[in-house]
Length: 123
Image (cartoon, rainbow, N blue to C red; front, side, top):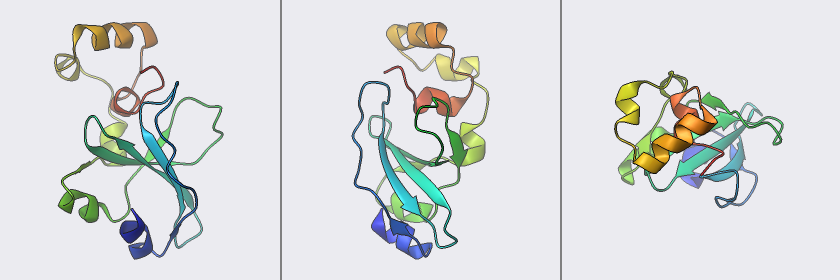
């Protein structure tokens, strides 16, 4: 984390927030070299790293962005999702990979994008 953000000329601004009710992922706030705030997200169950623009924490949906310094995470064995990948609509081919319980959650909560499924508010 620190290496990737420093490489982008930025700084980590908060400690890691663990998953909690309403969030199935770890979150760390950073500030990039241009002053832009960003959150780095980790879905540990999927070994997946993503980034999202910071916004009002009371809002459920995330504004996904590209992960700065993504190669560092890949070298550590993690997958890195781009903002464009996470903005894709959910397709049946993704749902086939889920358990029955996870599919019921999707049916109930109706996330619209792949990122909403992977970094969600209902686990």
